Image (tube, rainbow, N blue to C red):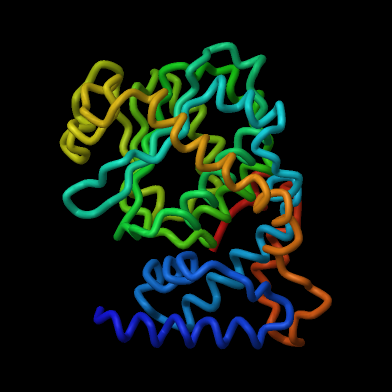
Length: 291
């Protein structure tokens, strides 16, 4: 799309945002560009997604408030997990993201803290990286995931994570890969399945341990050294992103209420029924289906 069109539509979105009393209006241009790009420059779709983005965040203070990159619980997450966007993209201009437990001792793992940290890293990337990809590919390495992981999952946080990542984040999900999948991966996947939209579920591919099937979709050279690639070590890439996140500490500390809806100011009749479901804590798996 020509640059002049993007500029015009960005101005239109900003003008619309300034007229929404319940939404924040000090939103980074790069983030608004991501909404437009991920919504194929459909203004109405972008507006709905922006509203949903801030509504979900307001309904999940456990995941989006009190976020200090220097906090011990956040540092602990980075000590036992590796979560990192890779520096190079695929030939299709897709951004690849790796997530894995680097310590098999699940007694050290806190699910809510891990999701909170994941979203902090995502916010850093969405507001700091000006190079907008045409798609996203997460890779989940389950090598250190045991059946004990099931007991660590917080269903409320998982539900909010799934709603936010599938319906509110300004990204286009292209593929999802689960590598080093153990024989019991089906039991762990069963926890997530009720939350998955059908179109997302179709994107997931499982890869057995010690297989090279991942490289059919992801060029090996763009992966970290640990996976036979040339992108540098996981620790090196992770440290770069931790440094970027910590540089935004003031932003995180003042962002709790700034990036959330004010429901008392929402225009009458504009509240969508699906927003009500975001606030409900899951009582059973039967109530977890998404539209």
